[in-house]
Length: 310
Image (cartoon, rainbow, N blue to C red; front, side):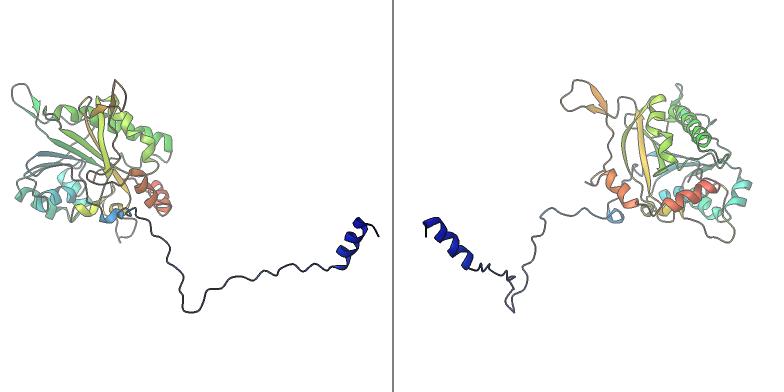
């Protein structure tokens, strides 16, 4: 028998015996090693972040469309602001009928040295000025949650009406702004649509303003504050609570005052800061935290009368 035939014959007679796989087991009494934890510190939850307060107690503060005046009274009672002028769209009689509890807020403002002015329309208001040159006197001008109300169910028209409101407000507020560098206008809006459709940054630019910074609005920073609806207090209660919804504040300054040098560029660019002052959290993180839980609230709000003012 030749060599090749012998090898073939032997290979046919030899049975293959593959090794059987036996899974490894951990000896008894030995626990699973703990996974390595990331050394990167976790970001603080939104409700625990230090709130941004864009004012000082000694500054001249003007508030537009103040609703039930709870925001203004909180500035005086809890933040010790000394020069507060709060304005409302309604007459004193209309205000009391819409918000029966408003008297206590009016008293707190007046007792704290502030003033309440009635019948002030953001689209027609006159400048708050003084001196021979009629210079503006306000260091901070606030318009919290501006809205024209439920004029129409058509989204495009509603967006246009609110854009017109904001453009008129910016133009009318500018003369009231103190000539001191750093004086600013602060507008707060809810997150998401339809508010993002208003393009508030562009509206400010058309009025000679630019965004210096923006931050997540935290209602809890203003004890006693309650979001007031345009139609007033709903009988029987119920409905969504505006102070619990995600919102964002935008601080506008005159063009050039908020500009910074672009990295590696020779021209000045708008500083559109989306970080909270003294906080490393980004705006994108805030939006993610809102998630889908507010979609039903947005839908309900669009179906009802919308909110104007605080």
